[in-house]
Image (tube, rainbow, N blue to C red; front, side, top):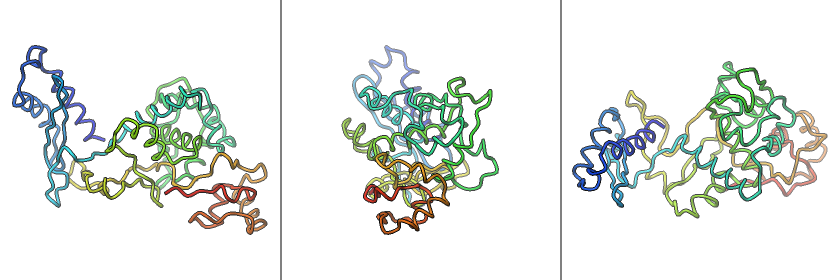
Length: 322
């Protein structure tokens, strides 16, 4: 996140610091000097930075530091960086496009698509529009509401937290602006459910592919929920570092304690059964109807029904995303 913010800031500052007359006659050497002047203070002991400056009808690239210190690989104009929270722009664009097409509405409750939330409390009042504008009332991370929780939030933890969430005067849907990673994870899940498509594939089909953005991708969630790039992209991904010059994660791995929607999901065509509200009931239903239910996912039967409350009458609807 820090790297991408720095890249964008350097590009804007470099261009903004030049008077209009200077811009018109500036040569590459002068532009590079101005970029370096703003970039140098932001560089840390490890890693590096790639800067793109669009000026006078052309685009110039400047690269600093190493993509991987252990392998001594330099940053190049082909290096891939983690977009971090810039990904929220892509998600909100995806939502806006769906609204324009009449596929969803900004005032739609998120519980309309993430149907497990229909069993919750105040979360039922949160809309898609509020999630996209940081006005849902949800905290930045679930841990701020549940400080005692340990480990990452996988989907069952996330749903439990949302259903137990209570809005107060400082966290009221539609009333305050609170920057919320939680809200965008939930928005991602809602869009995935609405279109019965993994969010990475949805983003590619609707935004990046039509725009020819062949090097912009969303990591695909793995079995542990962490997003991971395909090998071809992973080879171009830079290694992240903290301010102590220590590596953070593996190149191309998506970090964060609140994981994105998993690759296996229940399509909207198979709603939760009215008689299947708890894990205990789901396990009983599994025993009653084990021959009729699908075992097409890699998860165990108990986990499949205990967590997803899938119905026995739609055995073919359970999918595993590739």
